Image (cartoon, rainbow, N blue to C red; front, side, top):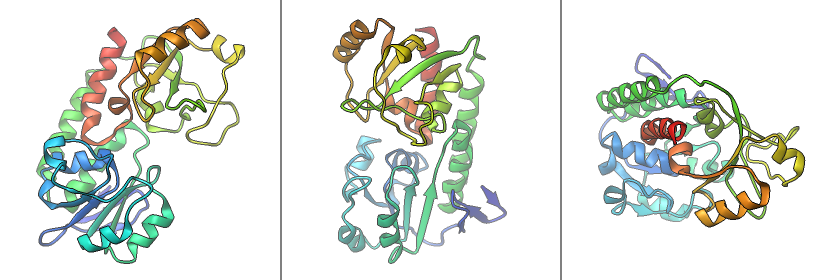
Length: 264
């Protein structure tokens, strides 16, 4: 969100356009990709090991651990001016420690596909990449408008993990992406967790139209699809987890992927 030259992140913290050359550490894989697509790769000094896109650009950026187990001293030596984090993906105690020596902490939290638009504007505004941010916004809106309106609602179970089996709550970016094509993500009744565990039973299976096995974070494969389909007797599909769950610039091909799923 913006107001003149003042920009606000997901916590309502104020940011202003950077003066000079920033030194950015990103702890969010999808945001790292977005920063690169905004033309900001030269200013990225640190990333997580899960920040793998775009491969040609991120390979030269220092790895500082995972999204939840970062190397604080390594980050300190990088002398960053800006840190980009996400409410779901990063631990608050870790972010608080980093905030002791990083002047600017930008907090992101896209929950709906439309939240990508203010995300583009926020990062584009802070890092003086507004023109490219506007281009991404136009591409996103074009891809969104190209989605056909849902003709019927189907209940799907989106699986992100096995042993234990885990899914997504209704109040997640993934669930809201699926809503765009009329696929309602099933979640355990009464659970207040964003990524709850569940157990298979006849009542659950009976209420499902299909099961979606995501390619990440758990590496589901076609072998898992075949085994589960035989177990539950319902359609099971392997889906690209990055295209459904990554916000930022990957949301644009993500919307096109949803359209492909409808016609598959």
